[in-house]
Length: 184
Image 1 (tube, rainbow, N blue to C red):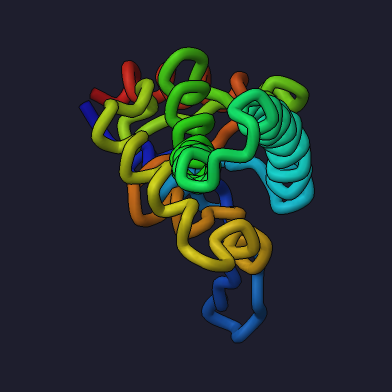
Image 2 (cartoon, rainbow, N blue to C red):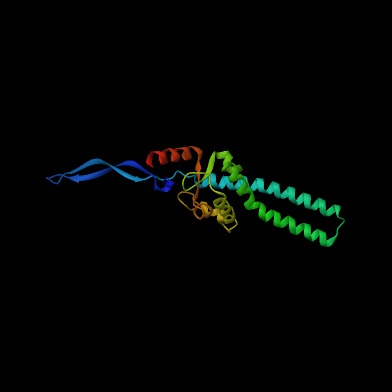
């Protein structure tokens, strides 16, 4: 099966020809070119990030509330309080990539992507494997990764390019699968 980056389409272009008298004539010719992947642009990608961070913050508040409640119930035992805080902080650190990993494995999308009807696909247009999603999720911990989607033409951030995944509208995924079937 072809990779989605190897798909082609027929296009037309204008060519200029010169006749025997030096007159320039315009004509059109057909040519085959690589089909660009219609990935989600930077605006919706940033919106996905904001919605996902909002959900993440709610989960953090719940964890912090439960750990504070548990600390209150232990009557200020210092060593136990420090242990609870450590566990709480490690849980929050693991939760960030974990939230993306679980959502993208179950539904191919995060809460933010549900709003824009977009999905995560691998380089073959399929649901990404666990290994790709783990890599994709861990890369999100790289500083400034969230902003790496803003400067690229295809809004293909570091966590996308390094894991060879794409975020595309659901209609684009269907079209890519159709083109793969036709061109195989």
